[in-house]
Structure formats: structure tokens, C-alpha cells
Image 1 (tube, rainbow, N blue to C red):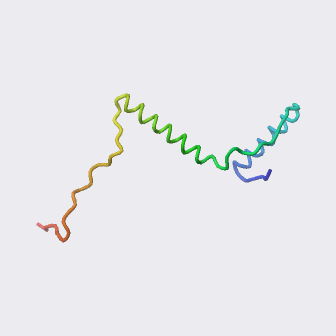
Image 2 (cartoon, rainbow, N blue to C red):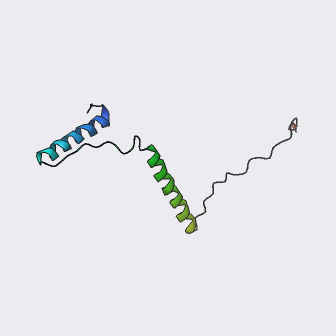
Image 3 (cartoon, one colour):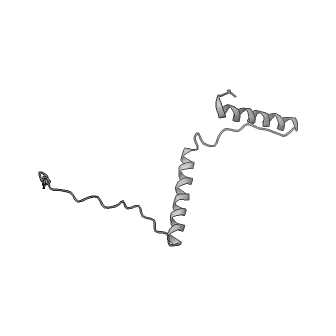
Length: 85
């Protein structure tokens, strides 16, 4: 395992120490391949599910949630100029 700087390095060191402790207790350890390359997709899905639950429970409790933005100002016709009076 490569040593990295900062908190990643600290995590790697703690992980190695934990493995050494388990080996000292004669625990059976086996290395397995990760189930997925990156947790990003799962994290996004969990975030979206929690956000949906929060919005639903808020609306059920009487809290008004709206994704509408306030109305934009009315459009002026092209070529119209404001009067300076």
C-alpha cells in the first residue's frame, strides 16, 4: 500500500495498524476486490433519495416547498427607451 500525504496517509497508517492487530489475534483476513470503482454514483442516488424524502415529509407537515423562482421582470419591447423625465 502506498503512503500518501495528509489525512489519507493517516487513514492508511491506521488501517495498516488495524490489520496488524487483527493478524496478532490470528483472525482470518482475506483481500477482496472492491465491488465498485467509485462510490460517486451510489452517493448521488442516496443523496437524491434523502432529498426526496425530506421534501415529501416537509410537505406532509404543512411546510411549503417550491422549486419555482420568483417571476422575472416583464420584457420590454425592442427599441423602446426609458423616458428621462
